[in-house]
Amino acid sequence: MGSCIKSSKGKVLVTGGSGFIASHIIDVFLDDGFEVVATARSDEKGRSIVNSAPISQQKNLSYVLVGDISEDGAFDSIFKTESAFDYVVHTASPYTLKVQDPIKDLLDPAIKGTTGILKSIKAYAPTVKRVVITSSSAAIINTLKHAKVYDETHWAPWTLEDIHIPKRAYETSKVLSEKAAWNFVKTEQPNFDLATINCTFTFGPVQRSLPSLDAMNTSNHRIRDMVQGKMKGGLLPTLPVFTFVDVRDVAQAHLKAVTVPEAGGNRFYVVGGHFSNKRIADVIRNSYPELAGQIPEDSHDDFPTDVYEFDNSKSKRILGLDYIGLEKSVKDTVQSILDRSWRL
Ligand code: NDP
Image 1 (cartoon, rainbow, N blue to C red):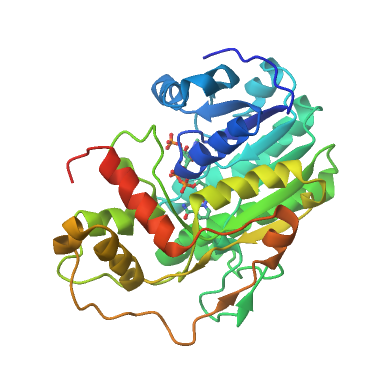
Image 2 (cartoon, rainbow, N blue to C red):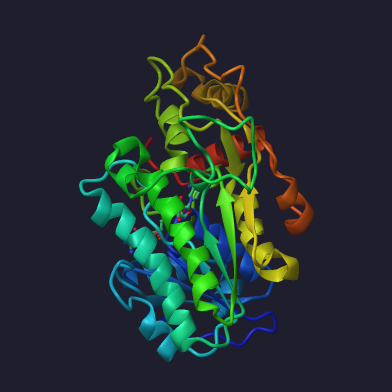
């Protein structure tokens, strides 16, 4: 663990610091002059978060240990012992599609982790002015009956029972945890306000602290699998999501959700564009001719003609986002994999 020099911008706690999205959030907050404390589940992960940051940034970055966020009071000791946080960005939540026990593995960390951190802040961190939570487009989209155009007014319809339907378990954990967060601020009236980033399927450069290709975050798997030739025999279906966003835009969204005063009290649907597996494959083949042999030649594009649209104008207007396109996002993701000289 390290001690930080007080930064003029303020001090922010980022939960789940070992994660893909969190790693980019940490980078943009450091670049903007914040002091960042990341949570990690082990010293090894905490050290890796700090040591993989550019040397010039390390003086403003430290980590604290937090175990399973489903546990009651998991965050209490941080706020009791670390001095005066100004902001909290809560990204820690399991994003996995394969679970043994959906309640223990998904629902509890999502809901109890979210309400738990809000309770701890209210009880022990009166200096926190705003909390930003990484929710998801999964809390917006209704895969049973798509809206024509989605925006922040839409809520996925899933209830507690849906947690037992494997293809809906993750979505359920996200919509119920986001609802729990908004309900907390409404009923508890804490000193801080809340904003949520409802980002869609996220691609982009893998985190510097990633130990192996196997440990890669879920949403980059299809790009990794194409690079490794796992879809050589045919592309897997793109379903269920046809919208993507680059992780660097997701990170900017979190930063702006903290720094823009009007962002408080809002959800932000953060979407960069549409995609299909065929479109990803085409970018990889065209940008990396040496990988062409890993990718099937004449794949069918399963992009639906009647695909749902998205309205991301609120994120552009209030957060000032200017989205990265699919080509750059996929290219940079592949490059980040190749740069690590992992055995493909
Ligand atoms: P990662 O799997 O890369 O990161 C998840 C982070 O949460 C890790 O730091 C992990 O810690 C931590 N975590 C998970 N479960 C627990 C737990 N029970 N107790 C403590 N920490 C835990 O995922 P992403 O970066 O992709 O996702 C981060 C957030 O963004 C999540 O809230 C996810 O729902 C949301 N999101 C992701 C999208 C995407 O496409 N990637 C899209 C929309 C939202 P550890 O490393 O120790 O396992």
